[in-house]
Length: 402
Ligand code: ADP
Ligand code: ASP
Ligand code: MG
Image (tube, rainbow, N blue to C red):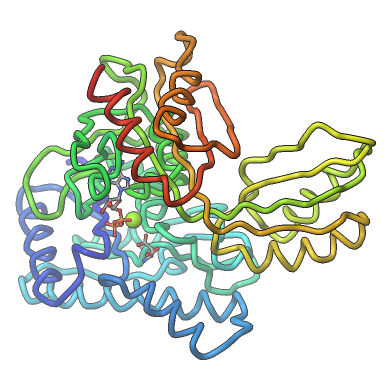
């Protein structure tokens, strides 16, 4: 009998009726003879509400307390789901991330999983119970509760599947699977039946929030097939795996509006400057993404980079100090930016894809302010007001015409 890990997202457990529907679903799975471990997110928009509550109460919001607060959302959902399962005669026990054996680093709000030792989950399974694990949480090497970051329940589910040697990990969400673009933004987006870990990783990292990028990394490293499917229908969804039958030139178009562009003006163009700037930022856990250093004039240059919106205040604090330390002229913060990307394994062997992307954006009067590429991705930072038009145009050209 194979083991299955099933993760239910916020919408799936959004209200009492839906929690009972998820319990029904699990009961049917158990009755079919399948062993199952469940991972749940917080109900509906609860994580956003808890974040807002913290903002209303405090300006400092220490990481340790934030994690204690946010992880309460998943704790609520997991115990309610277990109660609904008991009502159906299914023996189920809930477990926090710590109880489920998730050991993490101490990086509050965005903790990394260091090790998973799911002894209590194995024990519960051997007693014939359904373990229900709170997603996106663990305990740090300093024994504090940690939150794995937004979307972290996906990482909990795939890491648990890997640690337990499960045959696959199913991610139940509010769309039918992974699409060629966010189906809520591009109405002509198409379902992708199968996609490689490599492409999915690039899609997730560049804004396709349907899966957390770190969950895809776990899947790839431990070769766990990940199935993304709808909570509300019985359709097959998308399978994320090592190899697919056909590699498309462009498999998907993504966007990310949760990034901010920072520029340091007139810093000396000397060895060690970039090391100082980005070293200081990485020390406080900032995920700097695109970096552009302009050609220097009179040994003076500008450096621009992007970082996640949620880290804006921390980056700004750091830039204030760095600007003084490096005797830079100043810095600028631009929140009205977004990023569009095209992703496709076929790009590895085909030239001219990037230039075609730039041409399409140009034809639509969209100005590109930064560019970055990987062997299977091209990303452009553009004005946030142009995001939807860029997505439509790129999707039409690269997906619908191919
Ligand atoms: P959950 O609460 O189930 O984890 P999420 O909100 O994290 O759900 O992820 C599902 C959402 O991801 C969808 O509602 C959709 O708007 C968004 N999304 C963004 N890009 C894509 C894409 N390429 N394919 C499918 N969904 C996408
Ligand atoms: N509830 C958390 C969030 O919204 C974790 C998750 O759902 O994956 O980010
Ligand atoms: Mg999610």
